[in-house]
Structures are given as C-alpha cells and as structure tokens.
Picture 1 (cartoon, rainbow, N blue to C red):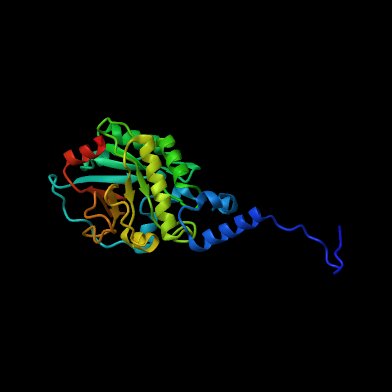
Picture 2 (cartoon, rainbow, N blue to C red; picture 1 turned 90 degrees about the horizontal axis):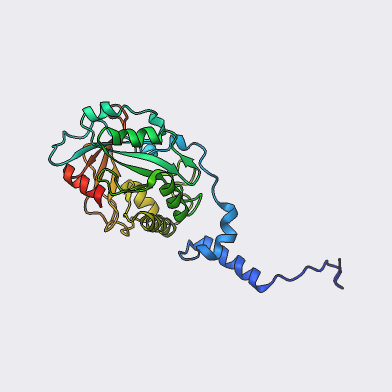
Length: 289
C-alpha cells in the first residue's frame, strides 16, 4: 500500500463512468423517473422484493376486503337481459363444485393462474377446465407483484402458465389483478408513474403474445392512491371493479362504465361473485374479441 506525504493511504480515484452511473441511479430512485429502467437495472437488480411468501392467500379481492371492508347485503336481483352472473376462484377454493354453480345460474368464471414469476395455482386445471366443461365462459387472471419483477416478465409467465387466449368463443381475455400489496408497501414501493409504466409493460407484452387487450381488476380507492387516478387505460382495457354492496360506485379515471363488477366476497359456493355488465351475447363477444 502506497502512502502519501500526508500520511493517509492512497485510494484509486473512481472512474467518471462509475460516478455517473451511481448518480443516475440515485436520481432515478429519488424522482421515480420513467424511462430510467435500463440505466438503473444494475443498481436496482439486487433490491427486488422477494418472491411471494403466501400466494395461496392472495386472490382477486383478498386485499380489497382487508383495506376497504365489505358492505352488508348483496347486489339487487339481476335481469337475465341486462347482466350475467359469474364467479372468480383461486387455490383457496380448492376443488370447485361447478355443476352446483351452473345450476344456480353462474355462466362465467375467472380463475387465478399465476402470481409474480414463481407461482402457479395448483388447482388451476380443475377450476379452469371444470368451468369450461360445465358450459361456462372462463378466463384466467394474474395477481401482480410489481416489486418482484418487470411487467413484461410477469405477463410472459402468465401467458405460459394458463393465461393464454384462443378464439373458441368460451375463453375470456386474461385479467391483471392490481390491488393492495399483501407483503408490504401499499403501492409496492413504486411511484405513480412507475406503477403506470409497469402496467403498460404488462399489457403491451400480453397483447403481443395473445393479440388481446387484457382486462384490469382494481378498486377505485387503490387506483387513486397508487396511480394518481391515471386515465391511461380506460379507452382500451375493460374494467373489472370490486365493490361489495348495492352498486359498483365511483369508477377510476378513464372509465365511463365497468365491464365486470365483483359485488360480494360472501356469495354461495365460492364466495366471490360477479356481474357482467351486459347480456350473454355481449359476454360472448368479449370472449371472441
């Protein structure tokens, strides 16, 4: 070790590229600037959140009920000409009695397929194929964890593990479940711009791989808090909104109407029940693209 005349050890000077990279990473983290993902990938790769610890406890609305509560009562009676009854399920429902649901008037289902890039629903085959075999129109959804990996990575994983689409008249486009983080910071530690960009990445990747624009599941409360009430998706992505009570209530910015309303988490047989906002022929049209 060389010693300067001052008596202090000599340390090699940092190179300008290294200093520039550190400064850029710090600036991006502080400001949450869009478009800096590539430049800061090396700096942030080691700080990704761990993979989900209890994905079997995460389903469409599991965190909505925790954070926003559930209203007493159920939705008003539906006219068969104006709406279609549906359900959504995940591994916590286990083996579902699809024939019972069909007999009660349920005609469509959404099934959780994946979470992050590490989890697939172990009950997916029974639920996805079982609903189809009883005559239902069904689709798959992905529970998003934007702090564990990129939107593109999660959309690719989803399509490869049950989230694909086929023009058979009985398969709905995939859905992206965006709700309160079950593992930490409500908005996954991302800025509003960061979350919007993550979703744009997910939707663009899904469409490139399937040809379909995906549905988005989210609550108005979470959307306002975590995206700044972004209006970026309303013109393209159908809205599936959870609100447990007598109406769908206020919608997030960008949507003039909802496509699916999750109106209760305590319905018959499986808990989560939904209404499609239209007649059966419109639901079939959504499936056909």
